[in-house]
Length: 244
Figure 1 (tube, rainbow, N blue to C red):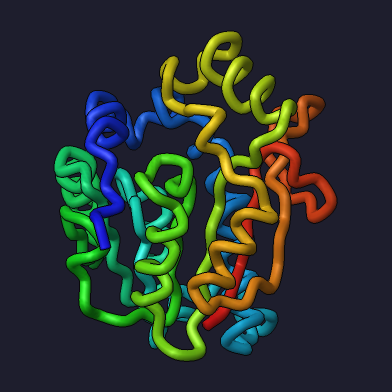
Figure 2: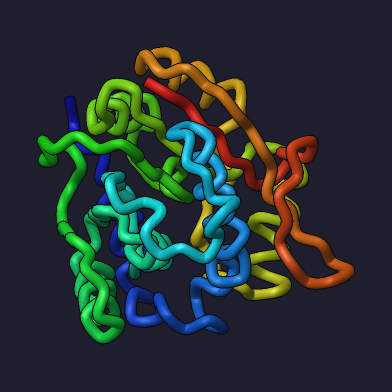
């Protein structure tokens, strides 16, 4: 199977990798949506692994015995919160600059995270949870990529994707508004033709012997300026959770 790494996409992100932890920089939308994204991920893991978080919601050890890999981890925006919950967390990215930034930030925060620079085809370890967030629209072949991601999962594991839907709304808001009007992200970050519709992602999951469980949209509330989860609105950004 050919590598999923798209060098052109990696170079595009590498130019701004120094900005990963700048909340008002090139990755502003990820910072603004990070708490909502993390809440969704935690809830899916709680449900799948029957973790009772109601008695001790602030516990830092809820994921102590769970291994997680964040594929396309960038600067570590998801890895660090998972590490604080004592997950055995691995972050992998083909961008060496992003991994360097992520490693330095984790060390400064005194967090134990196993960061790897390379493609996921090189990884032999199996994980309880696989995260592939905002990366499907940047790889060479999403169908093959998902099969490799599925191969990283333990039997009975869970995988969580997030990506952009290919709709007129995502073209207007995910590309034109985000890149050219609001300038939240650098111009040329996204190619609308590479966005993936939920029906396509479901098919790719089934091709990889995965069973889709949950789909939920990520929306931006213009009234309060915050991102929110919305199960009924998947027209722009959405999550899909599946099991093996």
